Length: 288
Ligand SMILES: C[S@@+](CC[C@H](N)C(=O)[O-])C[C@H]1O[C@@H](n2cnc3c(N)ncnc32)[C@H](O)[C@@H]1O
Image (cartoon, rainbow, N blue to C red; front, side, top):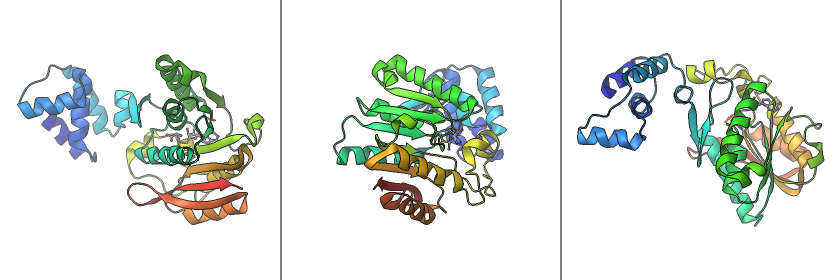
């Protein structure tokens, strides 16, 4: 059954057909992925909902994102609800969060004040508020549809971790505007952000991103995609206290430009850092 589904997915151009088929089987059987692996290894058959499995495989073969089909996506220690209207959190953003947490640790900031501009599912801010006890996080999202998902994930986290829910403040608004969270100006220890940054002409080839991630989450507002990231640099400069840090994900083509822009707009120690595959993927800068 899994082998047949994997063949269907491979023929449809899915990158990871075996993995996706096993994950959909886990979902249809109501078990964990490791239980599917174990059953395969032992030659055992799992009881599962065949109609549901077939329907999910057919949707995946039409290149609907796996995360939309199952309704959730892993991010660091969280399992976030996702669906149409919200950006699916990516593994590279986990590295961006880690860089922010490492900076907080190195600087012995135990109860940081943190801002997540462009929150989407809430991946960045909800990770920080659950991983750093006592952190206070403000998150901003502009899209109504995405905001509904952020709010949903905030509620899920708050149910399990009331302190984290209490310390996470969600705002609907334009993260590039000085009128958003003006009361925080000059008081924030770190801004960690993954804004839209895709160059306008660089339409993603994968149908999962091209057809299902919202345009507002992808495109950076100019031919080179750096317009919104630059505006985020300016807003971060306003929010941060002297010595506070900005960590911002960007496209591999934007490193030098954003470092220069940060240096010209109030930041020192600006540099580009790599993701785990060695590609230049985020700006790190300290407010002068
Ligand atoms: C690349 S997604 C990142 C989402 C999430 N932070 C993550 O890493 O998975 C960018 C998000 O920014 C939102 N957005 C775009 N422009 C914005 C703006 N001017 N102000 C606030 N949010 C914005 C989009 O709706 C989208 O949810």
